Image (cartoon, rainbow, N blue to C red):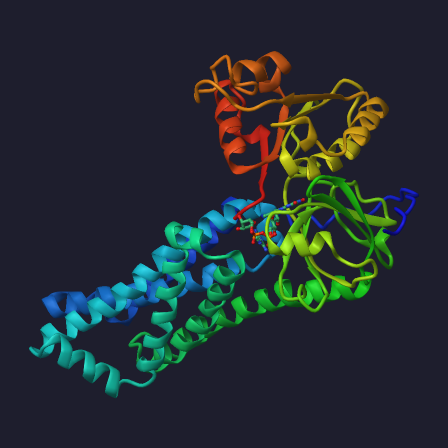
Length: 461
Ligand SMILES: Cc1cc2nc3c(=O)[nH]c(=O)nc-3n(C[C@H](O)[C@H](O)[C@H](O)COP(=O)(O)OP(=O)(O)OC[C@H]3O[C@@H](n4cnc5c(N)ncnc54)[C@H](O)[C@@H]3O)c2cc1C
């Protein structure tokens, strides 16, 4: 094990603030949806409504347009654009992506079903004969059928029951087929869609939506990470065990005093070993950025994190980011309580180190089932002394009832009120296992904490 590099803290620049609001992005998306409905109406969508076959065909067209557009929105939502991260946070983006994703698959299925039903009624033929005619004679429709099959596969493997059975990497790999699905559908829209055949402006608009989406994905998913990784040339400089199954990885690199990142944020790391380069894992900084090195702290859960715990010193690292809104930028109050569960301590340890605060303003509550699960104990005590902060450990299993009031629950509503009586007038930063986060969010609501004062980061999408 290499020695831990010494820190000479230097200020680092803050990440750019884009100033984009969630309401503005939502208005843009809804506005675009309306524009698409207008385009459909302008191209005769409403004129078709005078026969049953026409009505079904018109619904099918609209479903196809909106489904394709929503599919592009999916790529933008998960394209790791920092302005979207700032406006929504990746958690909310992932939530929207999940539910809009299912809506997309249903809309595209409705496009096929309604179009076939409409043509069948209009031509007075059978659905099977109509399907064969459409697939056989309309240009690129077979391609889009292949794209639809891929969409269904992505949707099915994202359902909870299937998702639980798949490893993250398998699920993610299958998810990438959505890009191919979207590409396969493009030509059939331009060459068979009544909205596009005779209207070059509509073709220009539709093609621009595709080009804009591709540009955003290329810039923020590929270009920006490649540039950051090339500029800073990160390498593993030390691997330090912290507790059973938990290691800290120290990263050294070039010009780290020019890497704009804040405490509470995370990067997606690819450790460039033979087995590890293809997997990206998100890890939060567990030390405030100091311009000399970065530190992450990893709990071994599965194959990926087990490999990272054994990573050789000197390994090159590719990073995407920084991302995340669990930062001081979200702060609204002078007094702050940080609540950590398990490895959720990593970003909160960095915030404890660097959030501006007067003595007495900061409290860290660290929840664990067993004292052996605690990491950074010495560092936390040292920081608490240095910063005039309180560090409280809540150890023990959740016993008794599950409503948070049970005497056996060491971290129910009453316990939180006892530990921080004025918590409703503070900002709360929360990070930990999903179960703990859901329970604590419920307790904080009961204690009257306004939503805008709760800042949370989930460690699983
Ligand atoms: C924003 C964020 C910050 C995180 N910060 C930390 C941290 O500071 N320290 C820490 O120990 N862990 C952190 N995690 C969790 C960490 O990324 C996963 O535990 C790790 O990737 C597990 O990989 P695995 O192959 O070992 O486990 P697996 O057994 O493959 O997966 C275990 C769990 O991790 C999830 N997971 C696996 N790979 C990824 C991935 N690439 N992206 C998102 N989720 C994944 C899986 O869905 C599953 O729930 C963070 C996660 C997120 C989303």
